[in-house]
Length: 267
Image (cartoon, rainbow, N blue to C red):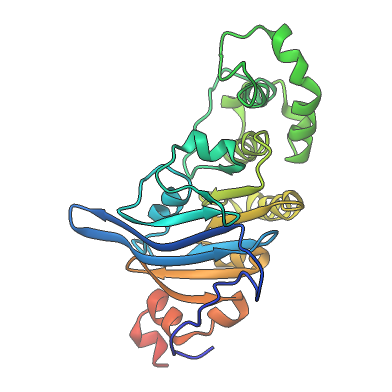
């Protein structure tokens, strides 16, 4: 890839329908454009990474895709038919789009098993009812155990969540997202604040849970991006700077300059 304009196509593959498609997305905050006319195609069944320097607009774009912010302009289509822009996060979740958050938000006294049971209950008429008896949550016990095993928490299902290590808390949050049975899973900085061992474990976990679904992740750790992403979109100043496979974009002079500065790019 050279320093020329990014070609259109956005990674969905010729003739294929992207599972998630953004067109002309804009988000303004008091006149400042945090996201400025972004087009994005996310191919079904792949891992698509959103990267860029601090302040590039990654988190704002992520929040637009998942309903936590409403766009100033533009659209977000799921499977080329469901308009997501303007819908609530809950409505988007019911359509099969789930997300994790950069900052952990768990109930310290509840066990992982209880957390996952409540997440499974939220997909039924029971909703998020924290006063549910253990007897009522028993109907979700087998599936909760399966999900905890999937994220490597089978042996810690009955301990208070507050006692888990940071990396294990992030794994539990991933289990909560998986409990919603999403077709599209968005992960916000899944390895942020982790040590090397937990990063490696998370990479393997994402490789495992991507089967049968599409993953979109915001990630600063480029080793994680290199290990997982089929396609990478680089943002700068709220715009798409470059897009393509990691092996290509890592050598793009525009990307090198954005991350490391003009002096490094000139070497």
